[in-house]
Image (cartoon, rainbow, N blue to C red; front, side, top):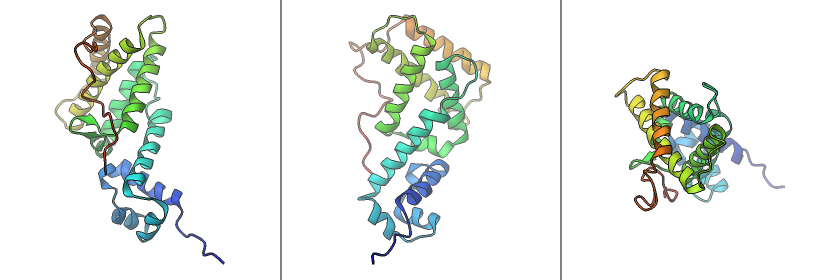
Length: 203
């Protein structure tokens, strides 16, 4: 009779997810996960081909939480502004996870960057349903918006500056308005935002 597995894949992912939220993605090693979950490293190597696979699955769960809950808070009734505020408050609450999402000034995982871009485009269209911009133009506006939002979040997280909600909203409204008037990120000038990763990082 085959021996029943004592440590399931879902339990390992639960432990790894909690660690990532608390201490960031870089905290995930086989030994640290095993120690936190009170089991040996053997189940990790039985359930996952590599630590890269495990980290990517954790990133997918984080992405799902961002998409369905964390970045869906309501503050002003303006979908894009609410998304930005949700992101800044998320960064302030989960500092280590926020920092781990960036590597060399970029969103370090394509899983995360794709989620943020998709949410940004969705919220822009919800806030400005009557615009007739091309998909490329909307993408440029959303990238500009994320540059501002991520920058403000970084200032808050690193305790360089503090902003009231009203100040944040004023800056974001001004930036969005400017991006809608001026196509600063047109392809003729910038092929891709330096903020967004094109590939998932190797672990």
